[in-house]
View: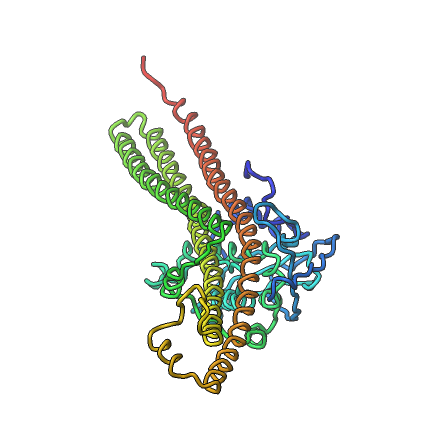
Length: 487
């Protein structure tokens, strides 16, 4: 078992009463143990505090082989006060919620994989007698898209990449690929469970509880969101804020530094993994050489063969450790990088809202100056915005009061329109900004918990390997002791 069994900030872990094989634990240690057998069967001024969930929580039971699903849909809106991202605020923390994604099996026609999804939570909006449901990958995609529409100002956790090499080569049913995807979906649901808004979404409730999911999801989804393309992100990045806010610039810098360090860790891990593979090959050759000696040393051929077998078992332990490291640690780093990209994309989206506000304000200022120039032709406005030679000559020739009044009326109508536009853009900008502060705090907590989880899993892999190694070499010592040496 793990030497890092302290609870992380992902919420508590509960157990379902029954036999030990049915224990429900989504802590980092449980992920490690389970993976050993993978492949088995709108304005900022309108904020209000959300109602707290029930303090007492009675863990409930689940039947092992029951794949029944259920459906109810409840809308829950949560708007919490704005606070500084530099300190934690309990109002921005999620209620205890644990979601388990496990038991990947082929669908009825054998063309896809479904996963069992089981939920335990203290939130009153969810049913107390919940049972596991089965969902396929495209259902998780629906949830991601629905949350993106419902909460456009939130950082929606990314899904595991669909178009990895094994998927593209048709190896979708490779056990390692299935387990990698399952873990990616688990991280996706963990992040939703940690988010105070996403965990109370009506779409999340339908996803976790519906017994007729295909029908219910169409009733809940108003419209499918357009997927984010790299071109959209590229053009957003070109939109520069005229007056950058220091706290959001600091957020970008923090994420960039964290991302850079993760990238370095990935590269170093790949280098270590390559050396481990070379070590496996060398030990494999070493075992072969010992086996060759057994054919020459007939007096001790049996102990030599057993020593060669012990070395081969050691090689298998090395391979298993590397496989588990790839599965639990390397994938964790990769998913963290994807989460960083999602947070940076949301910061770009917030910047775009500020740019929209600044552009609208500039346009309004230009129209107001043009109106003032017409009303007071001889007054120095301190700027030449919107003024050129043609307009100046027109002013000189168009001296009739009627023409001037008509132009002023048109401009005042435009000013009214732009004032509404600026007010709306300002509200949207403030809403995105205040929510981004909360999102960054959630992101900070999540990355700390997931980094701890990944590093602890890495340590667990090595602990398990060294325990196996000690057992292998200890078992061979009595065999070597039986070798009789001639005087």
